[in-house]
Length: 188
Image (cartoon, rainbow, N blue to C red; front, side):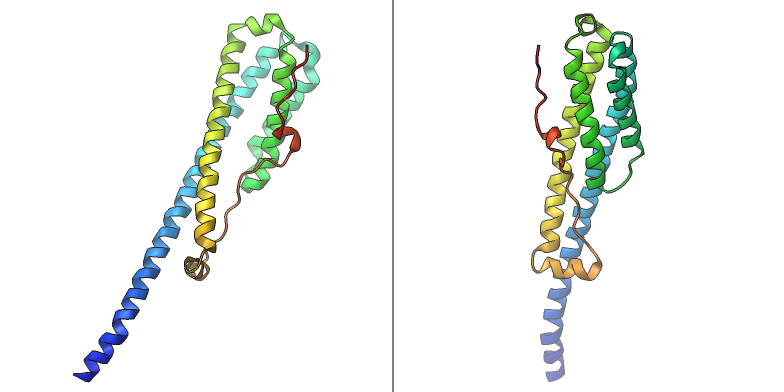
């Protein structure tokens, strides 16, 4: 009888601790999956932007032939961004360059009244603006999930479970380029 009491005294805390470890592990898995899903959403929105850029560039070419250098830069940066499958931090660098070039292009195109009146251009410009908004929303959601993951991985006692099972910190998608942080200046 005393052996059963000793076993019960030992088993109950072990079962409680095991249950707690399982709960933390499952929470870490959920956060990991949310990070993966939200990053996939970011990549989907970026692909949408990449698909719009060639149409925008082709529409502009006929109107702004002397902007050839900038158009080529946008095209080159788009190709570079499409090919970049590195970490979020690395992709952020590529995206910053593309976003900056697109901003410059849009500001320069304000000087072409015929182009601004072109229905194809207006529709592409609207779609690109809408896509940029969707990318920003997806990035905010992704970064929120990364914050939750990193908190769970770093806070005691879940950090112990995370360390045992190999869960690690995730990278935020951050603007590194000061130029990309600034709104473009429009001068007439």
